[in-house]
Image (cartoon, rainbow, N blue to C red; front, side):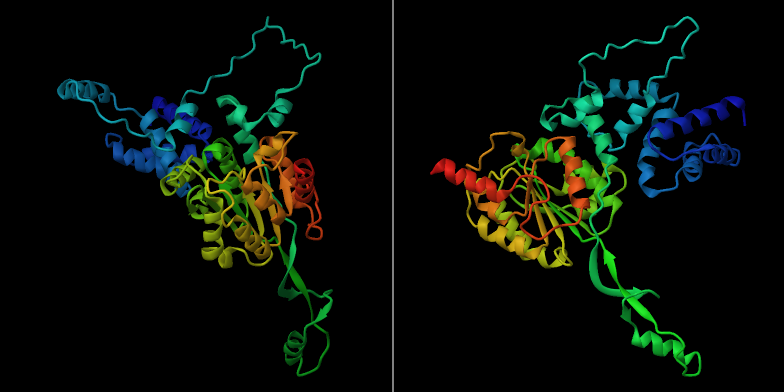
Length: 409
């Protein structure tokens, strides 16, 4: 192999690393050795050889294909494209949607190189008097007020959050020499190995396991910006733990649990876009909650499930059937947490019929409008839950209802 081709393989490996693929020196050496065993004039063989040596997971293949097409360009492709453009004339083609991995590869390919400091350069000086850090400002910035750069940084912070639900005791038991319960069956089984002599009493202990997590997220027009960012949090949670079910609702209910299981977030969101037809539309909270209780309640709300309801409570049908659906949902789970971005306002009052109908059946009422509120939610769910009806954090629904009644009366 020529030195120039070996250098190109090394640069290609660096491009894959910037795009998020775990490519190290071992994969780079294996790729160089694989190219020595094939016909370099065959582009298909070269692609297959590099993919076999550098890709270890199925979800990374799309990123690799985009990077290969962008890095190993055909020298005659530009001339062929110009000739085809002349033949086609002035025909207009409909715009094609870029593949999910193309943006990541394009950003990695165009990553700026760091400038090495020169001998005469002076270290930069910053005036930090009466200023706040960018990290602190990002934590308190509202999702709706963020620009493209802030949203990108917020998504990176969200992917680092880890949700650890408090453990619950189950009906299953496991062997434990120091367990509180005696295991009669295990004791007799052990005695048979000793000719019927009981030499030791076997004991067992109840197993503990995190409860299932069910998320119902509103994707109507008033919630679209918050839902888009919260999907990154839900994707990280769905790939970090088991027994997580995610549903989106607007005018209808959509189960996206299977789509969010994909490791690559861009591919997962592309799959979600294909199965959710009512993004940024209206909201029918009562109707969609009734459908969830009827179709999915018995499947996903067992074993002390925790439910996160993400909505602003603005229902286009008013409060029709909403109280009954919330009552059944509240009785089917062990903990119902309502996340409402409208709580970011200090003077929030439940004036709409939908909010007033939902509040009596909520265990905890919390805001969800910035990174700080998300971190507070993670800390809340990681602590053991107290008796139902007691507030471990957030705003008391009963206090809001009482305050609204006094203000109205």
